[in-house]
Length: 348
Image (cartoon, rainbow, N blue to C red; front, side, top):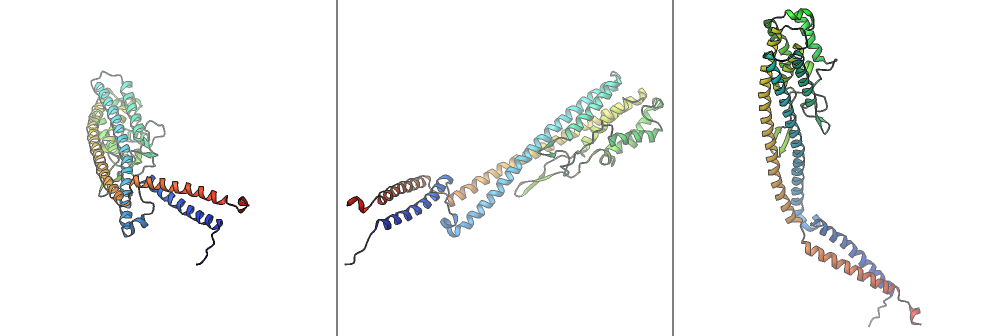
């Protein structure tokens, strides 16, 4: 028979090693209990871990699109609200011009209506969200519209220069009272219209791009998710408001002012119709974004279910494992403390 010596130090070291292992296992068990998934995917799944990684990658992509769609939806809502404000301001201008055509409004009131519409247009089109201008097209960091009412406005300078070049005198010159309806009509069609509906708009008014923002709202679907200040309806609003302001703040004859009011009224009416159509198109895009997010959320639920089937742990089993390990560790600590108190001196 071979005698084997056993010392308290050997027992203590063995207990210490066992405690270390149990503490490592406790950390893993606690992680599984908190997350509901295995602590080490590769160890638990083996060859199937690649499938779990692919599922997680696709899930991250879908979650990123949903987050992006939330920002897109917020931008579209702000755009709709802004368009509604412009329509309201344009409708007020239409009402003022209707009264002016009938000859029942003071010139100063009609001019004020034009300047108010211009100021509202500049304020709304220069609105920003999250540091990006809503109506700037792809130039989201550039203010899309210059303020016509500013003394340094290039658009205002271009209008005054065009008037002076066409008639030979300024609009506030006494000679302006001799301009006929036909004369002012030719000026509006040949000179003013190109400044708004032609190349003059981008040269003097707008810093926006015709190209709008295109966003991916699903894995296989993209759509335009912004409105440019270069939209024709917005140009018509600017032209109608400018004509109202300029014609009724100068020295034009009553005949010429009435002709301008009629043209501006028609333009503003067309603008309201155009903006209504633009609101409808924006609403359709809003619905597309919402529907895409709903479909993606359904896909996310499926991916999460597949991932849980692969990596999930039984919460009751995980809780029992944590409790057992904690109980064993506490018992081990107690035994280690008792062993460390053993001394031959206690028996002498």
